[in-house]
Image (cartoon, rainbow, N blue to C red; front, side, top):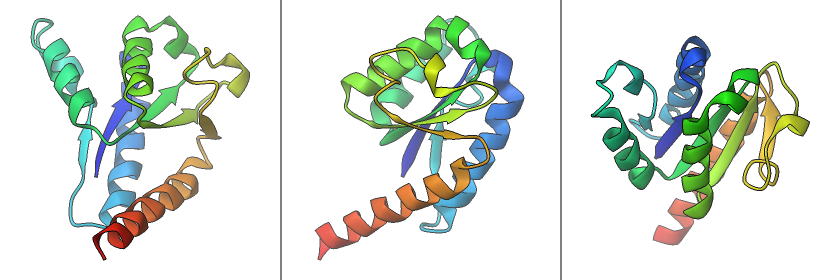
Length: 138
């Protein structure tokens, strides 16, 4: 399972914690996960846009870390727009903000969970994802 984590670079510490939760959840259902998006901030400015574009192309789903700083991150809105256009599953994690702050149309129509509720909600999503894959293979 390949997940793209979208976040504002000013929220890198929160994104690192979120990435650990995502990785641990996926690893309960398969041996390894691929998590994209996190860690691109340390690449040179002429390389990271290409890495992000490739990661968005490969990802199966997106987890959006939405904070007050997110609304000021045009790059994050572009990432979400790409996921919306690709009809990827988009999971929004609210941290220090409410669902009313989500911009329309892409985020407002997606399921948003609070920081504390995300692990259980994401676990259900991952379990269902792998159940569907197993059923399709049978």
